[in-house]
Image 1 (cartoon, rainbow, N blue to C red):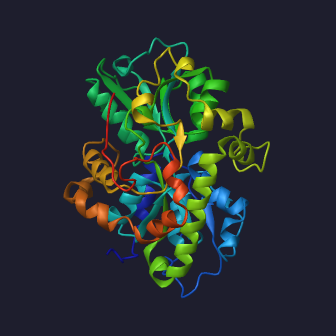
Image 2 (tube, rainbow, N blue to C red):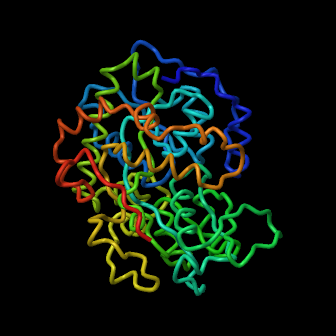
Length: 399
């Protein structure tokens, strides 16, 4: 187990600055080592649908019904300040991009531990309606934004580009980009739709609701949904400090119970949850219910024929976004393998010595989510869950 809390703040801020992310103005506190008893559930989240389970569990009182006190979830406007607050102990439950959790644990040796998946799918590649882009091969010479180098969006995008015979590059503004190259940059999610509309980028890949926002408000169109490429891929994962977990086993179990219950509820009530999250409901997300409803429910092949953004729905049995908590080891293994091939800014040499089998066992704590899904067996009714053995699946990538 990795128990060294001496994460280098300088290293993190250097990497974060490469992503042009907003940083917290307050200095990092000493890293939180965990107390004997957590006083309350403290959630930090970004305004994206990836945080749905955490927000629903809070808003519908599922944490309280487990006997836990909670503080109102705090909206954070960037991955860098969220990670900084988490490592400082301000939050004890967060959703993190799965590759970011890997980076945090193995590059910076902070004891981040995944206790469940937050959701699957929920992302897309968006391009301008004015463009002639219909396939990945048409992205040659284009500028595409990703939300963070260590993100599922960057991994799936680059995997798709390579499969289409293109080369991802990271070049400064003004540098020439070859016809078979795709220039990548990091941009915060809220900045993506307006940047696309203004012609500053040719496309972007990000979590919902910013794909739906691009469709409805920024003259964008979906090139492909990422869950239609990598079948029911993970994106954000529920992450806690390993020291908090080990010193508060009962607390952790109750947290995960509430989150799994929230995922079951969301799977069965996507329309209600979309309204609840929107600014027309409880205001957890900064967009109206029209956008969130589209982000969580619109996945009809008939509405995505030009380009063909949905090609594998019948085979994959998925939705635009799914909510199932089980952290399949096979997905972690494939992610580690693909991360080694993914271009990022900064030093990623730590990846080369990572064994996928080791990470699948070391990064994820399966104890609590296994008990929680047994308590709420309805999770198996989510269409993204395999029918033969819900705890095992085959990873499928199909461009």
